Image (tube, rainbow, N blue to C red):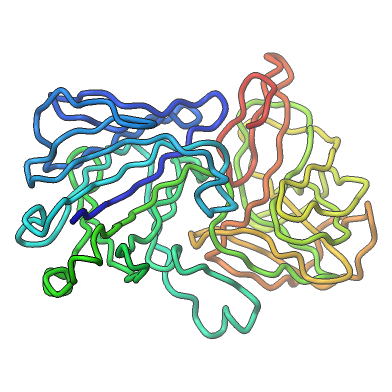
Length: 374
């Protein structure tokens, strides 16, 4: 029999995922846009490890085996992940390998400012509004840096037997001096009742590194939306605005200045065009950005709702009805807008610092360096 626990770490361009030995314990490490996170199983034994197909394997003190394997995204079934991953597996070859109590504790070391945001089940009101939250996202945690940019996602764990039976598990957090401890709770009674043919069992607390939101919300047509505010770094000039969604609609994007915590004067908007289904949509925008100044990133669409990615986390989303006109966002942003306060839409703008010629970010993503985009 074998019980397998999996975690997937995504390594995007200019980032690195790998394995190191921290205090003698094998530790998964990921550098994501200048932020380094480490993740180690607290039951890991001190041992040299050994090579296996596509990765390495270490013994755990609970008679389990810890594996790290590289996998490309197209083999994972998560269409919002970006790049290959370093996937963890815990393999229990018999029930004797299940700890008592039946829990696995994982320490995730978080740099200062990095926070986790719980993704609850959608309310009926959100469902009626067209929001969609896949099963792996309910009970999960989105990971953001101190500036509010998304770094990754800790997905809800599940157990799956060799017979294809799947059971969702709970993932709890507790504070730790170095970050947080994730606890995956198993039902030992369920495991004891499994027939021999049901093994191996896969328990998967997936951690994917992506700037794309894990849930979907319909941004209504004939509405102007603005999310923010986001504070700029140095002064510069606008490059483009980007979003990610699952369907194609006519759309115009842009940036607004802040006016007393409300989107104000239009800094610049795009000429408009159709969004790209299932991929990033990029539209060029011109305008000047002042240093250390709050701004709002805007989107307007026509024809039908745009199914945009998002995460549940504190951020203001303003919206106001207006017939769609390509390349013509309102100036200033319409007064009397409605708002939601718990949507981090996958919508952001890039601009280039005037002096150093270095791209920066306004929105739900980390900074982009060196003029390229992952």
